[in-house]
Image (cartoon, rainbow, N blue to C red; front, side, top):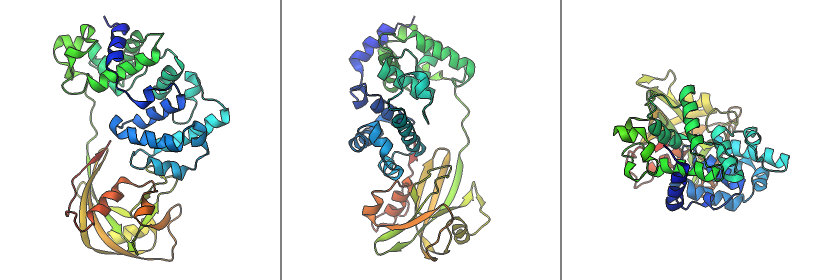
Length: 361
């Protein structure tokens, strides 16, 4: 038997002191939920504080330019979140008030079922359960649910279990307690079952194999990509290109020019210099390989060859792109691809030839 009072008693004693838990302001709660998507709390905290210093209200965010927003978001990743945040803020400004119902929140750009339920319950005491990865794991174990938690049947069972643990007097705390439990005790590996307030009613704990749940999903096979990055320098500045606004990935961010030269061992049809011309315009001359870095983006493992390069052009770039020279101070104000910092660091005199690989989550 799972009792909401046991879960809330545990949460009252063990909740982490996080800034978005000290407010009922729907804007600040919403901002935290958007930033926390696929991102660790420790990573989010400094971005959250800096963002609120610059945009303390949803109106401030709505009136800001997208370039400034993307620059502040730079380093947090998943830039589509920032664009949707801005679009939703502008819609809220048009409405004149922050929507307080589940339906009103779902009507905003970029807000899905989880974010709407989280904001509605925490900011407005709407008794609706949330379902994120942490909650899926906790409740899949409680139910010993041997199904993909994303499937329709499993999702209905999980939402029913979450609703059972929802205290109508404290719906926001109930939802946060479940998420906190998954983040701190009911971890994917080595869960701390002896400390869990839901242990008496947890079937996975009784079976003695909680790590069996939730059911493993088929993983997408990784891909190995080899890239060439061209670094063009002039008087302390580096030439960067801004992605078109309609790019499927990282729209509006600035990057060093690059092309893919090999995927899973299969070489590209074009030589790197010709591919750079096709992508950006101009005529490119690549020097010898100067450095290398490793990088990971979701299922793609990137091996990057860095070349200093020369570019002959009349200042014109392919339609939709923009290009400018930036020194270190200028780059610090831009929304940058995370690969830019790695590449430029690898070119510094004290850098080793190849940097260690890191993966953005």
